Amino acid sequence: MFHQFMGVQNNRFEKTYRCYSILCMQGNPKVLDIQNGGKIFLPPSALLAIQSMQVQFPLTFHLSNHKETNLKSTHAGVLEFNAEEGRVYVPQWLMVQLMLNEGDLIKVKYSALPLGTYVKIQAQSVDFLEIHDHRAVLEKAFRNYGTLTEGDIITINYNNRTYDILVMETKPKGAISIVETDLQTEFAAPLGYQEPTPIPKKLTKPSLEGSVENITQHVVKEEEGFSAFHGSGQKLSGKKLGEEIIRKKEYSKNKPPPALVLPAGRIFFGYKVVPLKGNESAEGSKENIFSGEGKTLRASRKGKGKEV
Image (cartoon, rainbow, N blue to C red; front, side, top):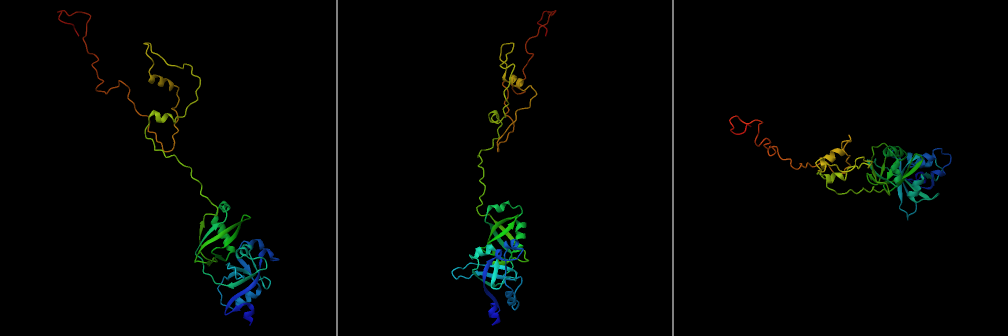
């Protein structure tokens, strides 16, 4: 009879309480710290009932909405046994998860959970990306949780801001205990996150030619200024000054060659070598410069021909 009154039947703990948020708990200075956690407050009678059972520590409980039409359930650890009799205090996010209002009935049942080895989570806002070290923040936040259940949206607090985190997957499946275990954590892209749009690149083949036509369009043009002797020149013979002479004149002011600004994918190997007109090979350019007849200022004594 005593065990049935305390909610223990056949060595099982299962009890129905009135559920209230931790914010309604009076005289608890740690309300703000435990609000963003996963542990509940049970009455002292629950501790007396559990002490007569063979249980596994740390204690974990299965919580469910008392309404038969609502199949919402989750798991939680216990922080203290100092709630008023007939009441249980839970974090606000847990009441939202179970769709409970203040004073609704909740079923609390002892349930041993396996130690977790893996969890995959997803932040419910892209604001979570503003945190510099996500793993360190989560490691500290998980200290306020004793369990993790697939499908739960838990809350963590960092730098006076609250972040909602979805538990997407756990190993073992379903629900796990995260107390004193090496937990591997994987991050999914936050809800609403979009990959940045890449800037399209022009599909141009790299140019390996160094012709003047290819290079001049990438030369940084110098500002045109005053030119004292602008125009073409002429030789004394009346012929126009050659283009190569004009080019030498333009670059005779100790100026570096114009800078090249080449687009991505273009390579410059120098200007194309164009041989000058009339510049023949070494063998073909050798002419008999001193061909012809020679003359002397005096005639030969014998008068036989001219002396060379």
